Length: 108
Image 1 (cartoon, rainbow, N blue to C red):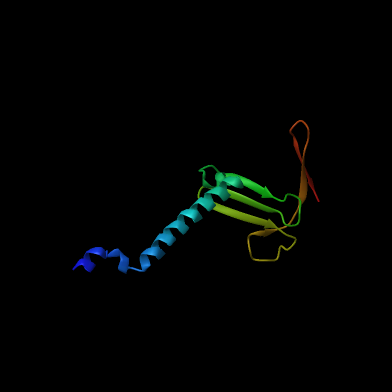
Image 2 (tube, helix red, strand yellow; image 1 turned 135 degrees about the vertical axis):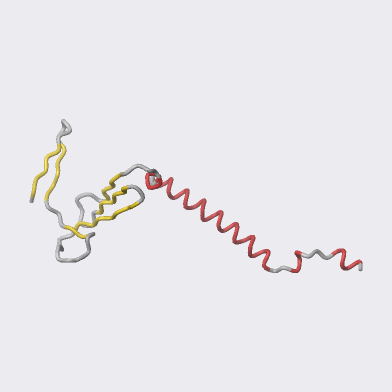
């Protein structure tokens, strides 16, 4: 009888340690995601405003990312126009911004 009083019911469950580790891992993962979003200034992805981001402008690996409402579109310009994928395109010119704020488009 005395042995039964010293033993607790949760001592018999070996999975209790695993569930505690899972909780700690989930908190760590959420904290890491928040830190990365804040570090790389990606907070506008969670706002309700529409926006357009141009990554690597003028380079061969340039990407145009637009957000319209809840939908995020990714556009990658390329020289291939025959593909049926609507995310491909080709460069058709260059735009220059003058000192007075005017933008001039020069087709190639």
